[in-house]
Length: 511
Image (tube, rainbow, N blue to C red; front, side, top):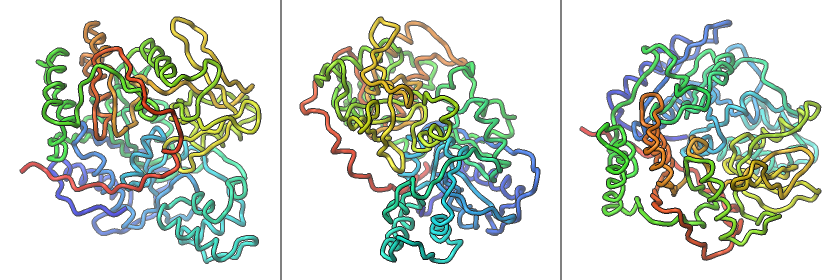
């Protein structure tokens, strides 16, 4: 993770100093790059770095992480953890979902999911020697059945990706060869950075405070609060002096018409009709914003259309399946799914942990690759997972319009459950980003006409803010309930090539 030299804005510099002071109090001095052993029984210290899209939260997180690593703090990724030492200092960079963690990793930040930190793999001792060697805490091992060339491949992979399981796979091993099981974390860690913390609920924050004596939350207060939080986000419960606000919008963000629209929503004079005119004006000036009267089915296969109401979501999914000629009793290869959880009895706890560790946690985006070898099994591509191809016992539910019970084309007796993913609610889309996002404007109009308010803000504005900031490159504002049919069949060839990691660009600030 190598970032270019940057000039912090005043609010970024202040936030950096405040976080650095908290780290110094915990025994990690970034200025002198010195470490003190962690204090036993230290009370939890929580800071929140808050700001809207374009304020530089992610860049600040990445810079702090790089400086911690330079000072000698070890990254804990969740795929392997070295032996504990009394003087060891650790950092885990976390996100609530696989997709959010993947977005960070593509920006050069070694992130993992909160779930992967709660559960840790148990390695076979013979192969743990390889992991220790890769991490720099052991000598090059001699392992029966592995050639010197295989070890060289593992080393080369690890130096590029920093993933122990990926390196062992590059050496020709399967996960079942070197991981003997999973266990819930018993020992606390050290420093935790949590991105997309607007998605955290109170229980998750309590779990994290038990693990991390020093915790820093990075979040956007303009997003939607988790269901059941009464419109309040967990960082809003912290004392005011523990909340650090980034208010400066950077030049890179100001030059982005999508973020311009997001920030315009803060104006109390902007109602829905005026905002829609602003979208049209932006589209007339910049091709990164598009206004059209149809949803594009081809985009829905990898980037779900974003809606407010469940009824809209279900109708749009059925329109998508009809456009591709999907049979009513089966899935086509390439259809998108959303993991809705794991249905396994307690006696299969190890299998549950294994599936969740592979990325099949609630809300994970998945692509159907075809039937598995056993009845009820499906081959799946877990978007954002480090080892994305999984075969799992599956229960696929396709909800039907105006019916309480879903149709189930595939049903194992137990396993991972899935809903269709061609369209998702804006609430469910939080934490994810896609290159191109389609926002179904009639649903936002309905929210505006309903006059609903959440945490003192019109609900339609919160929905619109979250929806349009899911777009990294292009926003499509869909004005009518119509579907543009695809010009090619569904496929999975696009899943074979892994994208190259991105490096965070320098963000210039306005003078």
